[in-house]
Length: 462
Image 1: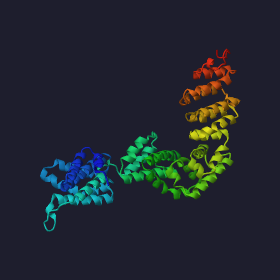
Image 2: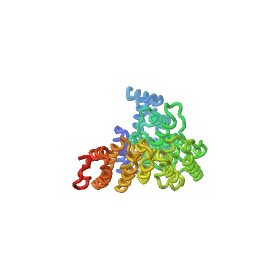
Image 3: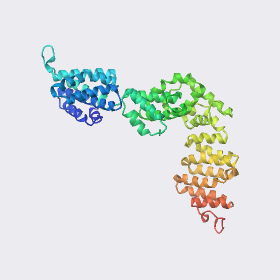
Image 4: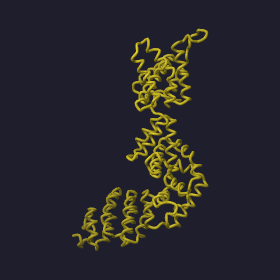
């Protein structure tokens, strides 16, 4: 059962809210007739106010209604009342045209209007008996009015979807999940909310070209995937339903489209749970081929990296058994690109081996910048010790920029607390013979030479 107190406090228009509160007080005090009359009055006031807002946005049907209201406001009382009665009779039709309500809600509100007329003119019954509405009727009408009209902003179905797509395609677009949820999910009608989620899912899954929008299909799909994640946090069931509607089309799409969809949305439960077993098997076959093929035949390198980065999720490793072995067999440069695409605690275990395997100064610096440093926040003391040991033992890890990168690693491992300094000092002890490297790291980390060198022994830094 709806919580009327909560809904009344959520009435969108502050000017209409006192009317709704009064209607609720009538219901609470046992005055069903007063509650019904005031509920209809609040609906009329709210719809007229929303029409005024839509008129400012250029909505023609809203402009006609607003013009009639303004005409009544300028007229004498004896002329204004017939005009307002005409507006009241056609108000629900106009609201449906403006997509402020749907057909079902219109029928429900027509019953409210009819009961309001019976309450205001109680002798309208055929035999002249007074109409006595029940409290159940009063509550039902108030609940319908709140859910259909009063708690919603002046948003329209098609307008909301159009505004959403234009917002996401705009060159100045920046992902702000709070704003996305506020503007296109939390404050729109349920029917419009469903359409917005379906549009986000369609472009995110299929990367459809929208020639009317000045944006590439892949960039638009990536942005829509972020939006779909945001909506899924608000309503996982709605997001899952939106994605499931597209599975048949995805199953018939080109392999590259299928794999990009996996890379883009594989970490979204609404997507992963909607993928049929045969499609998962196909995904697995393509992933096996990624390990065998040195050239990006099916996908570009960034797209391959995004697919293989799904190895960080246990449930996806289980569903796609080729992921883990394919990832482990990657070259150092490709493994680095995968880790860089989605730094995660799962990848930390591979970092010592990655540093041991680099074969040039450039490769060592590439691995440090794109894999080691991004994952530093996930290090434990044991991980730090293993990484520093691998770093120290491979001469290809000692390019010109590497000492300064180690200083940055020291900064990024501050979460390990005072115990990390013992690990670093042990590492620096091995570097004492290399004066320039030792001086750069020890001064950058604040670990002094005296703290490292054996007692009575002078170090190159002293």
